[in-house]
Image 1 (spheres, one colour):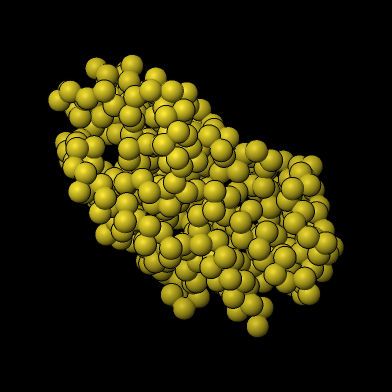
Image 2 (cartoon, rainbow, N blue to C red):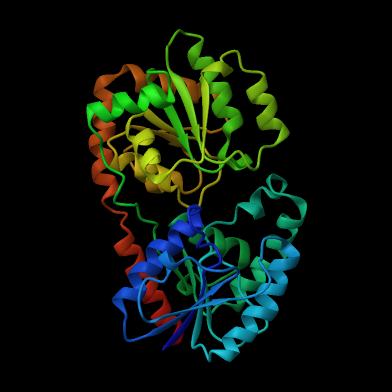
Length: 373
């Protein structure tokens, strides 16, 4: 079988959520199935670290697809032509985009439909593109993969897709995320938080990640007296005026530390050395940092909305993401109640065992098999 794959988000030293999903699943699938051929479609020169095995043919397709107009050209012309040229039996697209200009069976991984619920959170052209094309992709697909039961149900309700056509392939967690020694914790705090204990947020800084209410809640928490810092890890890329205003209005903004994009080693150390992860995003298809924190024996505060209760189970403090005081109270609880911290970390270790990249890859492969049989 010839399996073509959209690998445009496999970017060296720049793997984010969907790129990480692509990396971890494709690494396993290609190695586990040497009997099949894989054609990887990149939109730029590829890095050798993404050529996982001998059964992969990498291809760079023009143009680089980083804008709605270029997405259209890439998928409707370049991808369609390449599928025909390489005589592909199936096309797998880990970021959900498909080509409407081919009859090759296609499988999108639709991680979430945030753009249907909060279109105003995205640049206008992006939102318009997603809302126009993703319903078409869903109906074009031979099968659909998604990363939570929440997202599966959302796709069924929003697009009228038969639930039997959708496979849930939960995200996994990188094996590097694990507890660190007291010495590493001390060194990490010296490096990032002036030796103070800290709460941490990990991830992209999009509007839906709700940093505006995280800032307001941290300010409220600090007013009762605390030497804690708040570390914000990730690129400051999609800031909105609301996020900027919330930060500017903080009384304790000097206790907020923006780390920028971290190396994987630093990211593990920063997360594992924190007193808690605070992840109050109001829309998630999965929420990988929740599992990463659990693997590190770090308590989790997360939103009680969308997929997060499904991923967190009983192993997190669930809060209303729109209730600033509720988030602040959870911060106080998790930093002062040792018994609660112990319960959350123990249950987190058990909960996180459900989510492995091996299981993700296996379920995604089963989805591929269903699509071509």
